[in-house]
Image 1 (tube, one colour):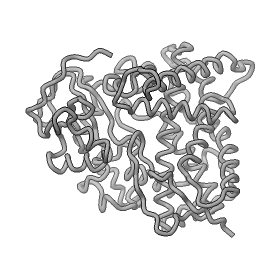
Image 2: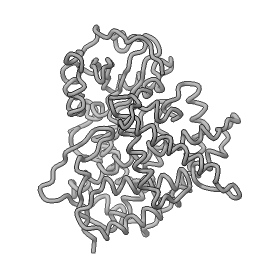
Image 3: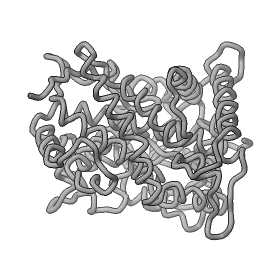
Length: 445
């Protein structure tokens, strides 16, 4: 995508970092502490230079509100995400702006209505039951991150595409990993054998496979999978998708659903394994229900599990910053921002703002429950699913997957980390424990 001339940001707080490389090495070495150090030094709006590009980061609920409640269409999601994802997910919902985004979102909402979500529970629960049984046959400690990643790709394929991947799951998982590594590489040229070149080849394989599934789908009877729902969906305005649009949306949803939820669920398991009190409270809630199998309406009763998940997402948001690019010059809290400026809302700094969150570095899920309800102190204090017109459609789907898995897991096993284990986090492309979270799962009597 063509961009305009790089904007002059020298009048803004911040700096350009080291000659030539800017802040790139600091960012790659430890993006988490880099963001907090810059915020502490320069305040809630600062400029930096990463991967040879100057941009502006904002980190406060008020800044986030200005960013997401974009009535004047100043902040382009498409242009913000394009550098990272444009070659790999060009038709994804996040890479559409304004009127076009509204049209596509209206059609896609059909696949996320209450009735559709109830059907997804019936597709997901047997896969989760089988996976939880499989955990009992594994030698401890179990590396949870790859286990969850495989499980959530299988559940996403069942829900989104309507197929049991079986042996194909590993190959598709490798292609998704290849694509995401390519999206994060600073060398963005399709030179043979480079990560970017491999990512483009992996994308072509995925697109070809999903077109094949779409062509071969059974149309003789109603189906609950999202691909079929999108193929048949018509908005109230009469809009519907073509085959290419359906495949692009499914490809993006598979990436977004299984990578981000894998990150969030892994971090939740880490938090519960290190917090026996909250693990027992979540287990008591799961045990209070009469059966391992849950219907969709049962999930609303798992409030402790949901609060634990929300707290894990606050501490470890899978997407650590949300990009935009200004469509024209504007002003933010007295700062003149030129047109074509790359901008990011830093979620992890926002999520640990001491003016909103009490003891912000501690795992305290009851901060989301009454009477604390700290997330209600500002509408844009908690942002793991974004905000405004681009709020993630998959929020409730993510809640379904996590609730079904935790409900079954906690009724079967007690979770603990190995003796002497301490967390060491990896932050790119999605946050996760660097050692894949080895857990000991002790069967309950």
